[in-house]
Amino acid sequence: MEQKRTGLSYVFTLAKGERGKLGVGMLLAVLCSALSLIPYLVVYQILLLIIQNEVTFGAMVMWACIGIAAAILQAILMSFAGICSHVAAFNTMHKIKVKVLEHISRFNLGFFQEHSPGQIKTTLFDDVDRVEQFLAHSTLELAQAIVVPLMMFLFMLRLHWVMALVMLIPMILGIAVPMMMVKNYPDMSAELAEDTEKLNASANEFITAMPVIKMYHLTAEKFEQYRNALHLYTTCWKKMCVSSCNPLSIALVVLDSAILFTLPFGGWLYLKGSLPVASYLLFILLTMCFFTSFLNLVTIVMQSMELGSGLDNIKKIMDMDEMKSGSK
Image (cartoon, rainbow, N blue to C red; front, side, top):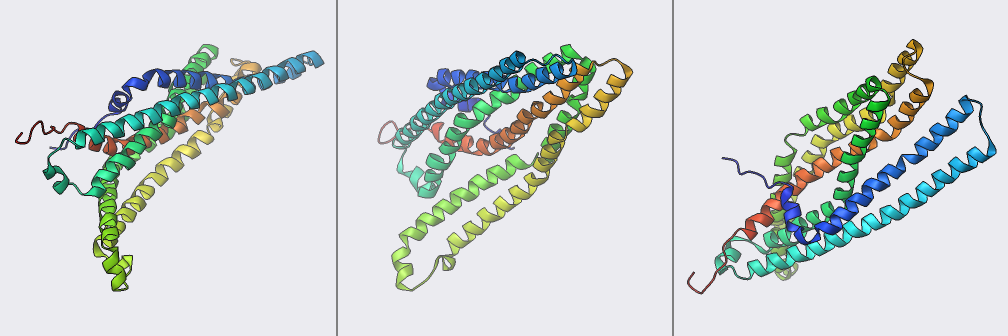
């Protein structure tokens, strides 16, 4: 029976003492994304003034100042959000490494005979570093990718529900279809983690045997264990790149060309008289920023698949029993 993969909830369990900083960082990231919509609203208001022939110097200066103030505030909030998430991520990384090292120090010697230094190094550095990278960057992007599009969709649903539903079409095509195409990606990420362990183990063996290798004027290509591990590692990387290339390309093309859905439908509704010109312009502007978060969501999902195998290794070590005494 296939072992159940460790979920993302375990990441936040590991970051138990840093949830406050992560929460503040995610909240600031959401506010920052909300502020990123203001320039589009400024452009909308200026176009509306031009259409209504009500352009004045005072109005243009006012909306320009609003746009500049929003951009400055957005940069400040994003800086503080990054500081909070990175501090929480680095603290969590430090605590995990200390916990794993202290836990391993109480194992019996059989553990070190069954696990090579390369495997332990992979868990302590590669797997833990993935957790740090996810907490430092992906948590902010995840908050932005979920909360901001939901707020925008509710606003657009209130503005014109038919156009709001039309805007869901490229979202479904750009996310659901690529996610169905990468269903085997978690298995390949687990395979990559195993190949990384083998590569690190063989690299340590190669370094240990380096004096003998130099004595006979040999190269790394002659070290069969390292050569085979490197071949497996590069082969797995190529396979992952090939399997993810088409889904990501489809997501990028569909989400970037979402205006091809809203432009004709909105024009048809405008000609029928059921969509005001101001709302039509607003939907066209929002289309340009509505789907950017969803593209980040696809990337985060694939990163979480790669993170799962590392979490399995960390949890596996932390769940092992310690040696309480010399005979137990």
